[in-house]
Image 1 (cartoon, rainbow, N blue to C red):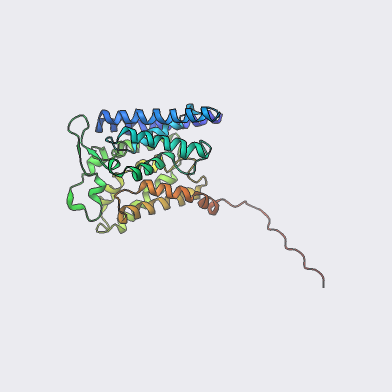
Image 2: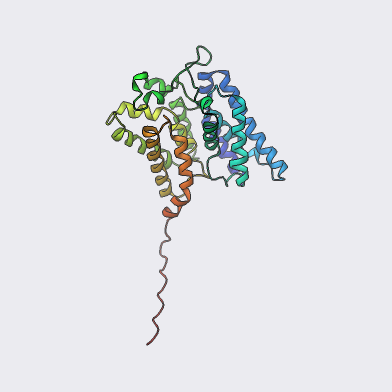
Length: 313
């Protein structure tokens, strides 16, 4: 039963990611397709090989490794060396997932852990982005978030329409806001994810940008550009909602979303990088046990322990 449920959930996630994946291939060309295939294949192979040699039940057909592989591919530039991608996939499956007991036991999202590992290990290649149509006139260029970074607005103009459609630079799966939103709506309709985390996350981030963004207070256009740019929508719907690394209580999900929005705002506005979603989600993954502890519902009607009778004098 558990395997069937997991397989069904992961299949729905793969379906939800299909629009962003297809657009990523259109936007960045055959190099994006190759990295998507490599990501899925290496993650599934890593899981099967590890479980075989550890004499564990082979669980690769539950599709969780396939989802991890696809998410890793969507979180890297189409120019990244395939060898680096393979290293990231093996790290996600073996180190982050399997060494902690497999699916259901990892303490942080494996795909995001791999992305952060790759950013630290291969900073240059991981920030070498391509823009425009990968089949026609691809060229290296700044991402919308880099242009929106406080203090860097003079380096270029950001088109909200292009960001919403997706014909901009960035990692393979983050550029098209509309494709990611379609996938997110599908997951909500299928009840694979709950609305509390993505809505609270994006909502809190939007309010903070609107009220406190340096030099852009009460600028609705800038707020919408920050929402559509980078990995916010991809992270909010597809990685922050990971069952294993997010709270299960309703109030916990709301607190989790608030923390995500606050940290992403701080990292983007005041950090050294234009992005901040990956680090915000991983940091909040570590806070989940604490969030669960303070938001667990109290039992209704539970009697208080009676005080011990005072000893007679």
